[in-house]
Image (cartoon, rainbow, N blue to C red):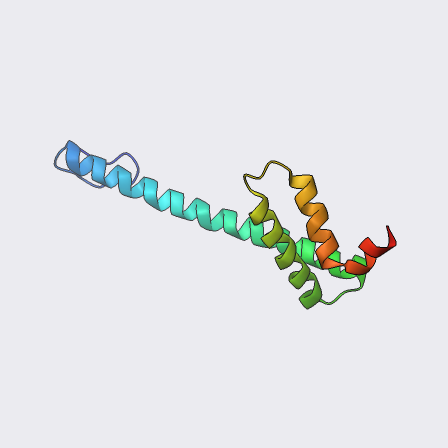
Length: 100
C-alpha cells in the first residue's frame, strides 16, 4: 500500500492514516504561515497609508492602533458598544467633550 500524497510505502491502514494526518498537519501549518504573511502585508499597507495620509510617524500610528485594538478587545460581548466607544473617546480627549 502507498500513500497517495508522497508515494511512501506503508504496511497497513494505521500507518497510512498517520502519513495522511502528517501531510494534513504540514499543509495546515503552511497555510497558517501564508495567511500570516498576507495579514502582515495588509497591516504594513494600512500603516503606510495612515502615515502618509496623516503625516504621522509610524510610532504614532502604531501607538494609536494599539489603543484602538485594546478598546475593541474590551468590547467583545458587550451589549452597548456605541456608549462604550463614546465613553472611551471622552476619556481619550477630554477637551473635545468639554466643547459639546
